[in-house]
Each structure stands twice: as C-alpha cells, then as structure tokens.
Figure 1: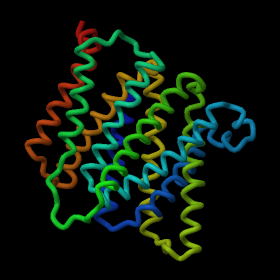
Figure 2 (figure 1 turned 120 degrees about the vertical axis):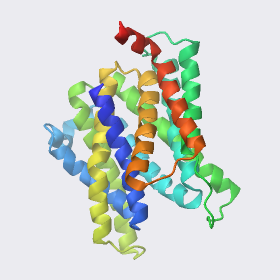
Figure 3 (figure 1 turned 90 degrees about the vertical axis):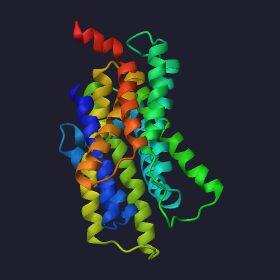
Length: 302
C-alpha cells in the first residue's frame, strides 16, 4: 500500500508542476528534454543504476521494452503539451486519464493476473471510474481559445489515449514476464535514458536550426520535473509487484487517487474553483474505489 500511495503522490505532483510551467511561461519541450536527463542522473544514485551502461543489459528482453517505453513517454509528454495548447486542458486531461481502461482490460483479458474473481459490482466500479474521470476533469470553457480543426481536436487526444494505454500495458506485461523486482531501478533507468537521448537529440537539432534558445528557467523547470517523474515509474513498478501484478485492480485505484490528490492540491495550492460537476465526479470516484475493491475492504474489516 505504501508504494501505491507514493506512486499517487509523485504522479499528482507532476500535474502541479505543469501548472507552474503554464504560470511562469516555461518552454515546455526544453523542460521535458532536460527532465529526462535529470531522471537518468537520479537513477545513477540508486544501487545498480550504473549497470544500465553495461553491454549485458541489452541481453535482457526487458531492455527493449524499456527503450520502446522511453520513446512512447517523451512523445506522449510532448503531445500532451501540444494538445493542451491546441485543444485544451479538459480534452487532454480526460484522454490521458481514461487510458486506464486499456491496461485494465489487458490485465484481465490477456495477462489474466487478477488476484480475485471479478463480478458485476467490480465492473460497475470500473465504469464508474471512467465516469468519475470525465466529470472531475471537465472545466468551464475559456474565452479566447485557439481555433483548431475538428480532425486535430479528435486526433491529438485520441493518440494520447492510445499511447497512455499502451505504455501502462507494456509496463504491466514486462513486469510480469521479464522483470525481476531487483531490476526495477535498471528498467526505470533505461526507460528514462531512452527518453533523454530522444529528447536531447531533438533539442540539439532545434538549437542548431535556431528554432529555440536554451534558457536557465527551462533548465531549472526540467530539474523540478525530473525528480518526481523518475519516482512515478519506479514506485508504480514496486506497487504492481506488491499487488501481485494485478493491474486491473491497481490502475483504477492509482488513477482515481491521482484525481483526488490533484483536485485537493489544486484547491489548496492554486485556489482552483471546483464546479458542482467536478465535486460530483470526485464523489463518483470514491464510489468507484469502493466498488472495485470492496472485497479487499471487507476482508480488512474482519
């Protein structure tokens, strides 16, 4: 349970940091590229972190999954920034969060790793989770928004939805079939090293073409983002292991926990006003948690 709580807290902190990026006009792509380099630096501090530099690392099947995941990560991060600008925060946020349905179904139908027999009440909880995610993410439409074609408005959130689901499913699959618990830091390290390599290479090209200019604010923002970003994956892997790799149970709880933490933090730290629809969504989220995990709750009461 500790790793699940830590995963929720560090993942929610990423949302707060992106809010700060918007407030202080940080160049998002520069910060994203720097953030992955920081993730690698954090990984070096862990025992075995430097092992990722050894050639035998690539003899493990999970190494290629980590490199694929690293590419997906930076692409999705950038698309989320682009979608927020072109389409809006609401559509982007909803697309990212409802992607949990993909790893949940993947865990149930493909991996078949659930620790319990799922019944109609549990499935109603999953449906309620999706409703809660949508309701809690809806924000009033802002005036002066950027005009975007219907195709782009649909395509960007859809790609984010697919990428997020593929990434979580890949983590779940790799953790079950190829990864040992003591290799979690190495897997996380190689994932972020790949993201860093892709991001820094793209940033170098932009600098050489004089499309952007590197600034200290973006570097500092990247450092601020990089530390919790590393631990968001590290703790997720440990939480999956602690719950017997039961992604069907873990991902809804994790994502709803991020929503609740994000909503509370937004009110406390950013004075964000929640609408009645948002508050109803949060209530549905709590109900969803109870429906999904009521067997575990009842077991713990006895």
